[in-house]
Structures are given as structure tokens and as C-alpha cells.
Length: 235
Image (tube, rainbow, N blue to C red; front, top):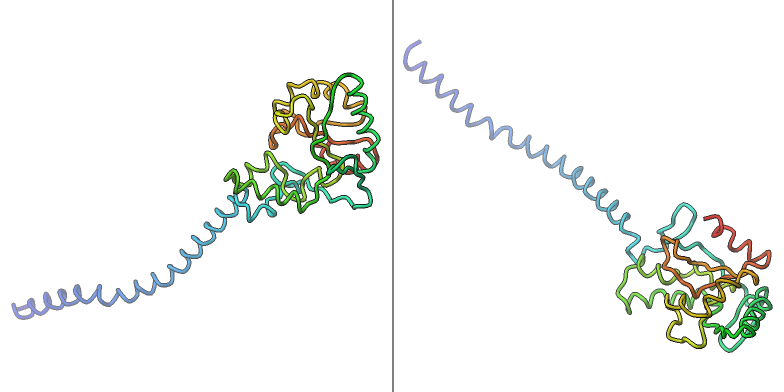
């Protein structure tokens, strides 16, 4: 092989080396264009899963935050009592007719013992519970899980059944709706006597999802009441 032929061979190699990336670049570009949508789809799926996992802290998605027992953030679902079963026991306080007699007798017996029980809140409609629950967001700037510790979401409050009653101590109004109520004579009397009248503390200190509420009691002295709270008593 003479020098001219060697030069031509070298020239051919150099040309081939220069042409190779130019010829394969379109192929590489096509591969990128094919892979990119797949990668984008995977990121989208991951994002949706991330959002779903954060639903408990989102007020807009609280209705979808069901646990296996249909509870939401520690609260079980309760139907709203019909108006026909409500009775007024004092201004602005309505309760289920089944508990009226026991509730009033409990208050009278406590009074006979020198204890003045005050009824703070009885039946609440689901609409009223909705206003209370959602108003906490603007007042306290709390996410749903935080607010649910102190107030049940709408449709998940025992008050809507008519069988729940919030009680205070007449001589200690500053303890109304406050954990300090447990230090009052009224609470000590209830702790020792409420069961005789078929009342039970709903949210005790052992509850991991809902804050301790020494003022909140529910009635379990009728067949209907027992059916309403059957699921709660199984937990």
C-alpha cells in the first residue's frame, strides 16, 4: 500500500468518526422523547400518592380520611336524631327524650348532695357542628387532625345523637369546657355517681386520638342509646 492509499484510509476513518455522532444523535433524541413521557407519568403517580398520604392534614379532603371502622381522626360516624325525639330541658338545651328523666334526676340528686351541675351543651345539629369545626381553622389556624382532637368533624359528633351532654360546675364557671373541670367537686361527684344514671365519660385520658374531656358525658340507659354507641364501646 502506497502513501496515497494510507492517507485515503486515514481520511475515511476520520470522516467515519466525525459522522458517527451526527448519525446517532437523531436516534438518541428519539429515545429521550420516548422515555420522557414515562418518567413524567411516574413522577405524577408519586405526586398523587404523596398528596393522598397528606389528606389527614387537609381540611378539604377530611371526608375521605376514613379508617377501617369508618371513623375519621378518632371519631365514629353518628346519624342525626329526628326532631320528634328531642325535648327541651332548659333554654337552648335539647336532649334525646330517652335520657331526659335520668339526666334531670342526676342533677337533682347532685343538688341534694350540695353539688350544682350546669348543662352547657346538649343536642347539636350536623350543620351547627360543621360551623364549630370549620370555624376552628380560622380561629386557631390548625389542620384538621389538630382540630379533631378538640371537636368532632360534622357527622361524627355524639351531640348529634341527642345522647351527649356537656356538664359544668356552677361554682367554677372558669372550668367550663376545660380539663381543669376534673378538679371540681362537680366532676368528682359525676365520677362517683354518673354510672348510676347510665352516664359514661366519652373521652377519657386513655384516648389516643381525642383530647381528654372530663365535661363530656353520654347516656347509655336505653336500647336505642346502646345501639348508637355499640361500635364505640367495642373500641
